[in-house]
Length: 160
Image (cartoon, rainbow, N blue to C red):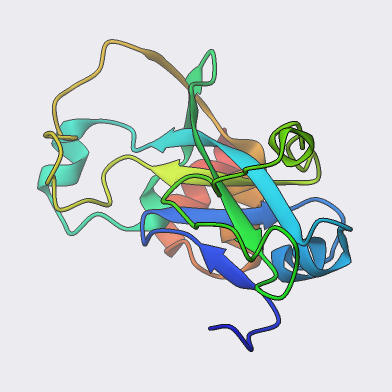
């Protein structure tokens, strides 16, 4: 890993995005500190009963929590940078320097955390939440344009 251009710390239930067309790896490599730290928001399926009918996929998570609920952040790091030489943890890198502790989040990057993509090791994510949800139009467009959504969901998305 030490010779890698950049290393992304992400789980299978998370999808990283950038808003400027560059990859998250480019963000880390191009930053003077060698890290791109970014926050995430939860994405949900329409309902828990919908999940019981089939294997839940990332493409089923078309809903954002209203108001959006944030997740603990993630990062992408350049191993041969000042930041890359620190201790890597699940959600952050240990910074001995007060200067590095004050690095902000990358505002042109983030991630979606898919609630029902889980082994439920921590808690049962199928437990219904009493939250308001709204369709995430960015997610819909990405999944439709990318050809990931099946025809039935495409029709629903086009009608909404």
